[in-house]
Length: 232
Image (cartoon, rainbow, N blue to C red; front, side):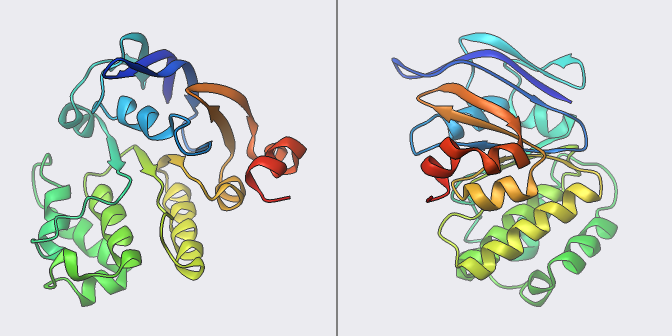
């Protein structure tokens, strides 16, 4: 579905991604692991059109999307849930969800109902300001808002960051369910164990390069991965 080929992306004068190549098969969950500063978020921002690569290309459903703007990519079916959630804190939960559907035409009533059923807490708090929700609720709102654009590919950047372990478990369960219902997921995550448990394929980044890739279940057993990311 998505193919990232030999991407070089700069932050100012700093080369952040040094020839990264990643494939995301349709219907799968693919995770990108790595320490802080490895280039995970830069990869996501490049795919989502927030950053433009200096070299390399990105194809989505066999179409070259390199250099497309974020709103063009939303229309094509790619939605990003950014690191830090980026909730519109002065808007209500309902308004946040409506913003997720801003590129769509026609009624969004059915889809609003669907996300409210998936996230009952959002139904309860739909008139509450987004900024007054807890961290876990804000993460659910950020995912629900992205789902309102009906993405074919959902990009999730650090969805478990700063959340209590119980909430983390819920978030990963939600990711699994979204995928089972037909949405392909690319997941950047520091919680390597949880990410490898839900993912089909995994890539490990170090200083802007892919240093390891393979089936998630194999990387879960890999001794170098265990040592670096799983605390063994």
